[in-house]
Length: 402
Image 1 (cartoon, helix red, strand yellow):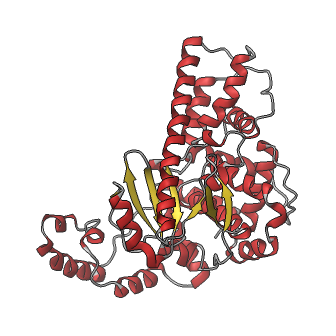
Image 2 (cartoon, one colour):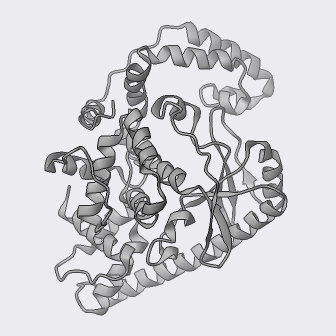
């Protein structure tokens, strides 16, 4: 964990709260810029940079600062415009009987000192599965391009030149994630909560305990897969901090206990307290150690906001194998074979991932189906496991996550 990362955390903390004055010290603003960009928090960090510059505590050329400030203002204005457009789309969906539940995004950005500076690349809405076709038809009529749905996916990606990306969720998690990572442990049945967006639009989100649970598991899903960033941690803890009295922590703790996530959650809370200034009253059975705390922060620094680095590609499958052994006492191949049997004849979109030649002609689809069945009986080549993956697996074992 680098000192520049710690400085980034401090400036991010100040930006979240909007009330603290950054401490007087020398900041490597180039490194902080790079780190905060990779973490998806630069615009919130820049709120602290503004204070530093205006109080003459930052060594940066005026021309560069002015350029950064202009970029910041353009992004925040663009974010406002995009969200207003999306709000109007949601209003239209609601008028057509399609209830829209906001996941993450504005459901948590309202707890930041400057909500429009917490900028997401997309908007996630959860709808009733039975309304999927109707919802997509309305979005098409509004100019959205709809990306094909993959088998086992829980979301459909919809693009618009003004509205950006809307991810329409028809479930909370992908099939494999829900089956193996979360063991189909959590149901989200609470009544939706209404909140007011920056433009006074009334939006709905998950109930208080459901939302806390979803945010915790969303963080952990990315943390497990390839890495989670500091923004996801801040989102989760801001929500818990602001809704503490309304959350059923007996239910939360029961789920975390059953899934083997109590220890990592305790560390999440401790890191939020120590490095981001949270005052959450949660206690834990686990005593955090400096060494493991630093390992988690180092993992978050390297992983970035969504862990997109090449170094971690393929780690998710390794973790899934180990976790399946723990909960199901068997080989992941048993699960994979069962899923294949349950879907013998997938569509072209699904098949094109491993058999791209099907895109040349629909007549090639039966050939690909046959090849897929034959491939299923072939002995799988044992790939050499990446040494970094083994180290990260041991790290997650230390956190009792396997």
